Length: 454
Image (tube, rainbow, N blue to C red; front, side, top):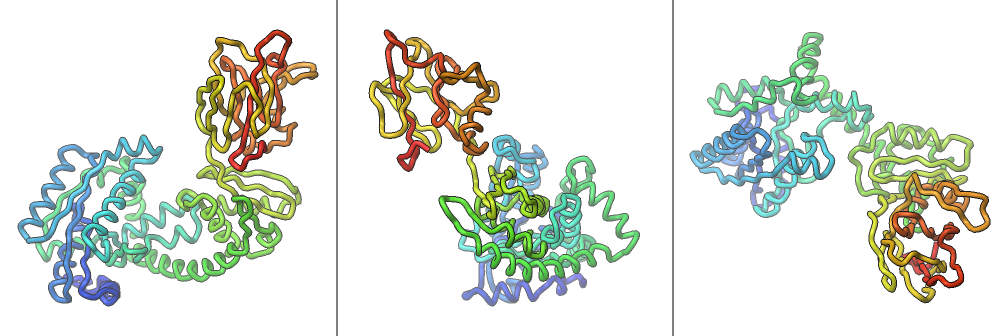
């Protein structure tokens, strides 16, 4: 690559420009590091010649204290000195990671891209440009390789996805460093980038990629070429996988497709088809991998007619005879208090406690007068003695005997008195709370959203 970056995939920027009239507005993600400063300078040169406007966007993750503030001030000052519009954002990455149960790296990525998308919309920018380069792409490929994410993960970082473009994806970090040196571009260094213990990417950058370059000096470039080949092949397979997934039927909020249809299709098409179905059921693809799809296909091929598999995002995959059934089962809600004469909502159920029967399925019960009444999900320690039974049995076993599958059991409301299970719809009333002469009588009524008890 020459020092003017003319090999930096100018065809991409030409494509971006051709899609917009008048000349587009570009939002450049600028951290202040060497790579993003190269991007900002390159875009300024590009728009000076071809037309368009560049806006610099910096996000402070609040992870590095004073040095993070230093980086923000550096970018803002450089933009002011060079008459470049500047927009800043910030977020408490650690708090967000704790709240969402994410790694720091993933939390930072979500906050950063959310800020970029909002800013692009507010500033009417046609494109968001980032400074990801060939070394970043190689690191992503290696991370996905060790995670077992399949050929989709091995296709690396996409050059264009939606309104996000990465014009440096074929340029190495060394080439960008040479460009910055010739142009005299200032930048700041993130000290955590040099700490192998700070993140998996740093370990790859410091330990793994240097070894690969010893084997082949063009290892990073060759990995990028492999990623591009896989991306094209994946696009072809993906079209066939989508066509296969489209043969699924949506019935009663669940997806159904023939197990034989999937098991007799080549895995190169069947696996991404399963991933499409899983995404359609839960609305998310992240953290669903080729391993998950492979597990589903292995179970599809088994002769066993009934089985269940739990996957991320509250996904439940079941074998039902000739069909594969995929659904998203939300976690049960937390416990809620209930008073006589009142009703409460528990998931898809409405539970009332009154002196008369309701429109669902009602159970007469004798409840202690001063005990607190709650409705909650079942607990592993719950035991009930049903009328006529020889003794107490676990609620888990009683639900199975009543024909409830585990995912159905998890959503059942349990009325409790003083923490003890009193009655469960479809299971019955504990013998200790059966109506008795001389004791006040109440009715517990369970009604599903659709108006039916079950």
